[in-house]
Image (cartoon, rainbow, N blue to C red; front, side, top):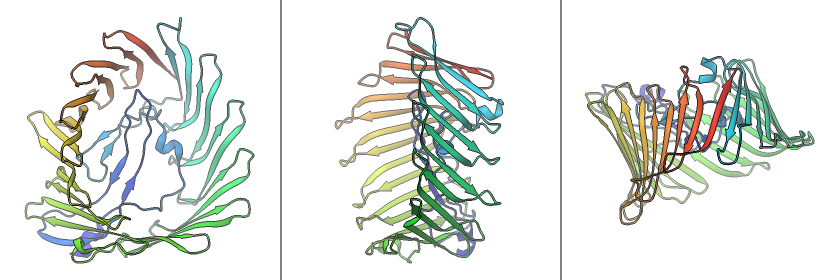
Length: 431
């Protein structure tokens, strides 16, 4: 039973996405774990929270905010806690985009602000940002393969000279086996080498410095036969152990303690006869303290409740997801040290599980809302309006509104003040 369940257990991946002011700032956190339904048993598994084995950074793949960066919390898929709509530029076969800006009080007519080129898969290959005088203030170029993996990325100074770039070397399976960063004068800075096992898991990650390739860091990963991570060891260039991550569980996860230079993680899963299940993650942080996270799912793997506790077993975050007559409402509350709400996130979905509205409420020590942000989406899940409320959370301070074409691409974005007057206008053109 344990081997069968362990075979379905997958990885945790943490991603950060950076968005512009008119888009949503989101932290891409993806936590993947699966479990067979219809079983009534308790088992102990291996999982990881922080796993330093990812391939060489693909900047434009993770941080490309011109690739439709609207993203929202997704309690309906435990494999992906945050969801993005499909790449609109790929679907609409967009090759180029221009963004023009205009401040009605200062600008007689719109001026070119941004130029973007895309490949056939909707990946940004050229990005240029201009100031009002038409001078380039940001310029990047990148090349992707057919699977969307970055082969090269270059960043240029305002004078047109290269300031930074990196290149990736792939094997026949499109796995990155070497990544190189270069200085502005073309000298090698850091070279990373990745070694894989037969299941395409990274078993070794080596970092070298400079032209002579002096070893400065080495990461070694070990796996169980089912492909899950067993341990991760991080060594310096001289072979001295810096940190060790263990993902093996004891029979009593609560008794797992932090060892010198070792961080331990453990996971418990409970399944009832109806297929509902609870997953409990228990770990020791680098401070030696135990932290706990409890997630409850229904038989359809939809998150119903999530509780997070700190090292003193005090509740820090509570998530509830409830079915309504028109869809779902998910509430996420972060608590302060006095167990009072600090920030509340509310997500409203329709029956098709498409996000229609979300909001963030910020509370003071007296439990009163001080600030409030609100996001509205269309039927396809595309961002159409943002409201920022004044202190007290009931009166709009300023807002941002999107006009989109039939393909869902933005045409005009209006920034408005508390009186509803346009203070800034952004327009989009496509080829």
